[in-house]
Figure 1 (cartoon, rainbow, N blue to C red):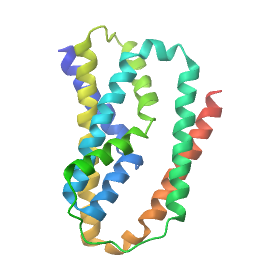
Figure 2: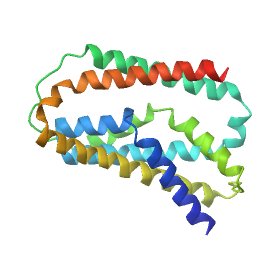
Figure 3: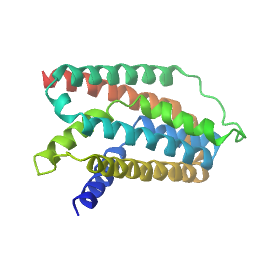
Figure 4: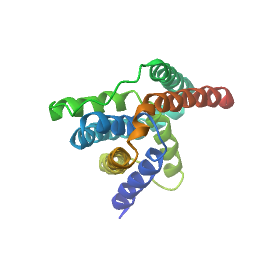
Amino acid sequence: MNLLHLFLFGVIFSALGAIPPGLINLAAAVRTITRGYRAGLMVSLGAGVIQLFYTFISVYFIDIIIRNAIITETINWIAGIIFLGLGLFYVFKKVKKIQPVENTSDSKHFGYGIVVAAMNFLIIPTWIFVAVWLKGNGYDFTHFREILFISLGSALGAIFVFIGYVRMSRHIIQKMSRIIKYTNRFLGVIFLSLAAYQVLRIFYLR
């Protein structure tokens, strides 16, 4: 029963963390707008692989990480710098007309999802917090299968939300096509806001 609980915890916490607009779900939505539904789906699956990997690493090394504040602060600084760079990129990027769907391979979109998700270091501190909370409630993660089950749940929960963004992006195209030209500016504002949040979070924790 504990394994089922851990799997469900993984699904729920990951889904809740992925619902707010962020690096990965917006990337999946934008790829859907520019390349089609299947491309967005493959990006979501690729991002899910990284979600599984980052969750596994966070939980597996939880005891080492929580004893080393330098590791946590370094992760937060790297995430802030990445968000700042992406925010500036999208704010100053010239808006182009949406081109017809390109006939590119699924593996290319899947790889894009992996690369984008790999830049989202916020997954690690988020799951460090979740793992600490679970350890305080009787889950010690002493067995490999416990870590694997919560990581699989985390991946599934994230993929579910990412696909939701993919489906919503198709709805936006059909019902509100004029919004598309503002996509880059919107992404820029989101990423700059995340960068500002990271900086405030780092200095607040001090």
